[in-house]
Length: 168
Image (tube, rainbow, N blue to C red; front, side):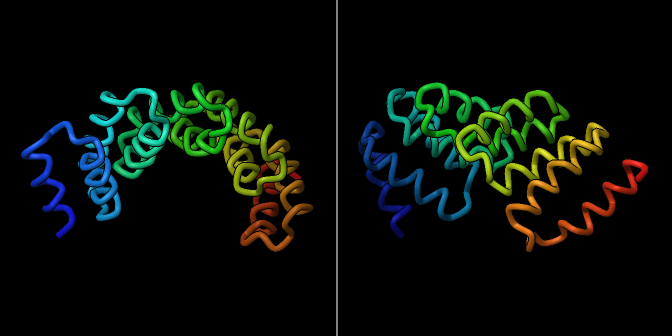
């Protein structure tokens, strides 16, 4: 297999960057996310200016549920290249899962600065409002989503539930 071939090459020359990168990609494609994260970590250490490796590290760490590594990688990536704003969305999800709602809001806002009508980000913002029991703001956000994408699955039901929670 290709994986075994690259492992063989790396046994003979552990510093072969192209073989390391190819193996890391294969590991990710095979779903071996923890192994891929280790491989991308080595690549980032050897090539700290390569943002492609840093982005891949964030993605595989996220897939491996290594939240600390994913956050570190994503935050560093967007700090070095603001065009990589899309990482604010997974960072917001991670922060929300950890109960860090203000941090999550901050990342959602940065994402929405670039894509103000992104339904996925707006729904995540509504989720955060709901978790914070800010039902009125969650409703307003859902109404905004409805104006943008009225066919959004489950949106009308959600609006109804939010009305109930808001005491309306």
